[in-house]
Amino acid sequence: MFFLQSHPEIGRPGRVVGTRELVVPQTPYVIPYRVRRERLELIAVFHGRQKWPLKL
Image (tube, rainbow, N blue to C red):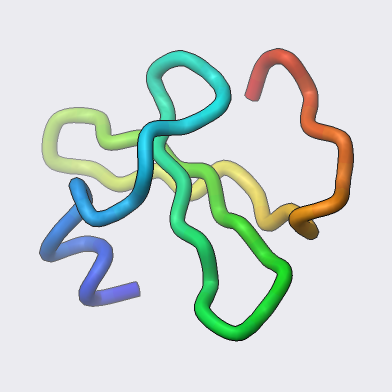
């Protein structure tokens, strides 16, 4: 998570507006997150096949 904190733009644009997504290598997991000012907000950990809510 330190790397993500240092480089928050590394995640792809999120499915939900205003979020980004980090795909966890070699796993089926995706971590949606938001960058708010000086803070990184991890929203959840989803399995890649899981249905996502419209709002996070």
